[in-house]
Length: 432
Image (tube, rainbow, N blue to C red; front, side, top):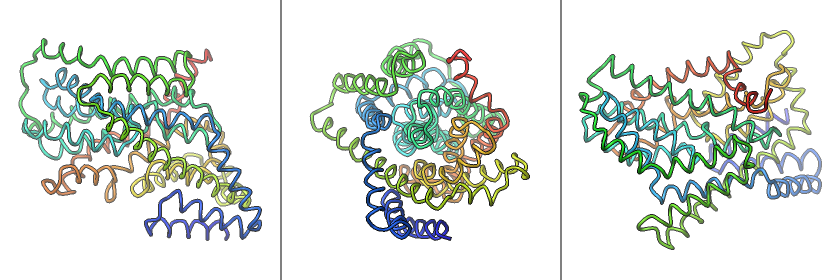
């Protein structure tokens, strides 16, 4: 009853537009005070604040966010998009494919689905509109492509998940790479099939210009070098997560300084934006930990296991229920908040069924990100609508994301039925 009332109050506070981190902290402290007493509740809360602020794993988050801010000012999103356009623009639907690839690449750098959608909504949509792409495909591919950022390493949400469940961040990044590339590939295939079935979605094929393509690829050396150092260093064992984040932040800063128009004001803006976003993540993380502490005192693990009997109920049915739950949750919740609020409830089931927590983390991120483009409340769709303004109704954008939702459905089935897709690379890199 205590746990149920806490969740009810939490969702009421969130519905009242109180920030998710603050809501979690309020409910957590109040519930602990009712359970243990006011003094003990403050002690527990103080310990959680100290643990978050001294966590070396969490220290990588501000650095990755700073890397994304400097990369934005340096114009890396334009480099990625222009190179993809030069290579694929001559194919039917090639500009939409380039947009998806660009979203995946830039999303990995900035780590935010919403920021990726907003950035490429401004860069790519106008270009596709100018070349007579159907509005549904142009807007849909950007809204869907924005969801790739939370999964393709380095992922801020995946870092937080690993800290909560006490798993290796480096192994999680290794595990997320193939599912991320699979998502990217399936989105490109969705565009390829869509324009084949309905040619009116994209203009006629243009003649390929190798000189333009080569020049664009050469110009894209900056994001290529950034990825090579950060991800290559991580997967090659040269860097820890924190060191990779530091190298990425420093290199993107060098790129920004070398970009015309980068001023001291923009440098300050990057630091301020990083501080605001990192602070928001820390508040959510601290609030979620305080709330999780209350959950542990109510013995939520046994409660969940008593409601869902993993010994008699088929595991596939439990997984199916969790998949549907996260798809619905992703339509209304921010990715980080959805993961943090539900992890204390779901992890006992995953551990009880003897599944790998890193595998489940990758599946969870995939599901919540899919929810961000799922009707009726897909957050990325609304972000895309805010970028294009009144030119497009929401129904057009939702129609545009439909092929990508179908691709996502296939991907989730593959990741759930075949965990080896996720865990193969970590096994190879560890020599197992």
